[in-house]
Amino acid sequence: MGREALVGAGAVVSPGFQVPEGMLALGVPARVVRELTVEERREQRQRTRHYVEVARHHAQATRS
Image 1 (tube, rainbow, N blue to C red):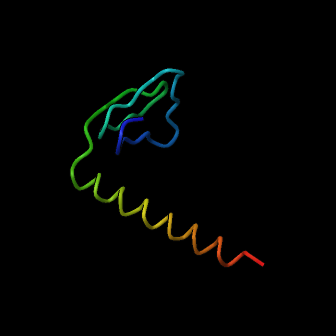
Image 2: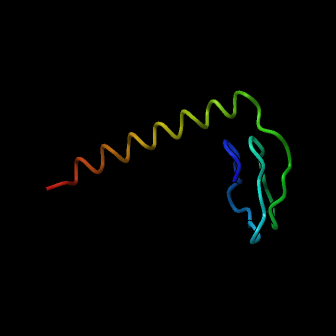
């Protein structure tokens, strides 16, 4: 997986398949379909930061 690349839900990634940086892969089997837009890449970075924060919060809340 290249930096900021995405594989769509339900896509089947074959062994050795590579998704280049900033590209979107979809399908069965997965294939690269297009480059992600600047906005899509920005939104994905925001989602990643959000889920990291949620995981940290959960880890702290469940410690005894």
